Amino acid sequence: MKQSVQDLQTRIEETLAEQYEQLNHEFDELTLTVSPQNLHRVMLSLRDQLGFEMLMDVCGVDYLSFGQTNWESDQAVNTGFSRGVFDFEPIHQPEGLDAPKRFCVVYHLLSINDNLRLRVKTYPADSTQPMVDTVSDIWNVANWFEREAFDLFGIIFVGHPDLRRILTDYGFVGHPLRKDFPLVGHVEMRYDSEKGRVVYEPVSIENRVNVPRVVRH
Image 1 (spheres, rainbow, N blue to C red):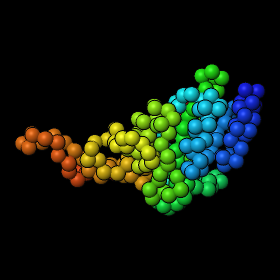
Image 2: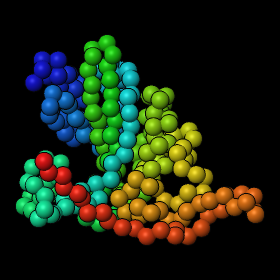
Image 3: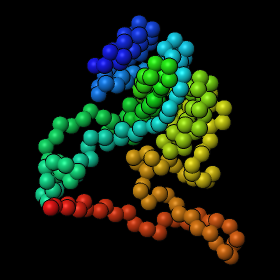
Image 4: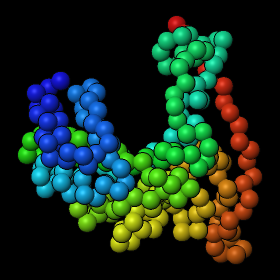
């Protein structure tokens, strides 16, 4: 472990004490796991006491069926990008649509003064309506990041000043980066020259699964 990362780990342990759930070190990076109840307080401490003045990114993760979708093929090699997986250890992750810890919100922080980075993760308690506190009052840039996570994953950020879709259309149904969202979508849209406007129609294409092609030299 780099000395700077080790020093940061010590400072986090001393500053946050019992306010976090886990602090993991891997690949010279620290990942801090925080409960939704303590998220805002911890983020404020990370900015004001530990010097993480910049929020680089906020993103959502849907762990539905994570670790259960490895494809198998008799025609694939056992290593590399085209490997076929036959025997692997199952990963403990949610199985149902309303399973706990299905969704995760990930924050990437940067300390410009100390040249340090930190990843913060929190798991909304309710997967049917995932909710966490907004951090847009701590870092202004979180405003659009949180709107994106709301739009694509349906994660609600409590206290956000203007939580509405930012990438999809106003009448869009569902959240396209959720794992249970169909690949072909729910509706399709086109411009109707007779009506002079965009119209929504049932999806006319069929979902299909492509077989991976193995290229050997």
